[in-house]
Length: 83
Image (cartoon, rainbow, N blue to C red; front, side, top):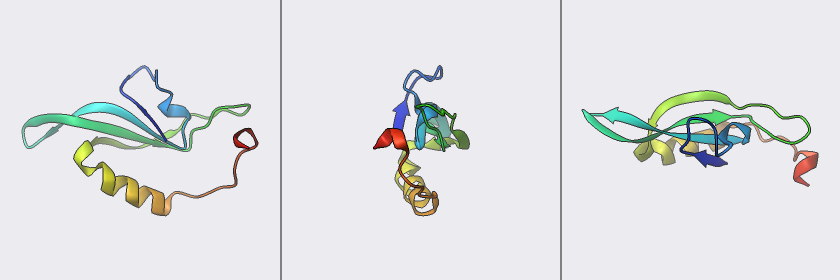
């Protein structure tokens, strides 16, 4: 899992199994911290950008979102570059 606050992908959230890109979200008329959620990214010899599956998730909702994501995210074998 990688987290970045930079819209230019400086934190490499696009190359993580689960990537979080910081953003601002309007909730009940107030601006709060939030994230866009990406899944399926990887670096190494066969890099692949993660796919954005959720936008503008308030950080207060992130524990529930990640809990659900972890339960349903496919768990593949470890990649060669991870071993």
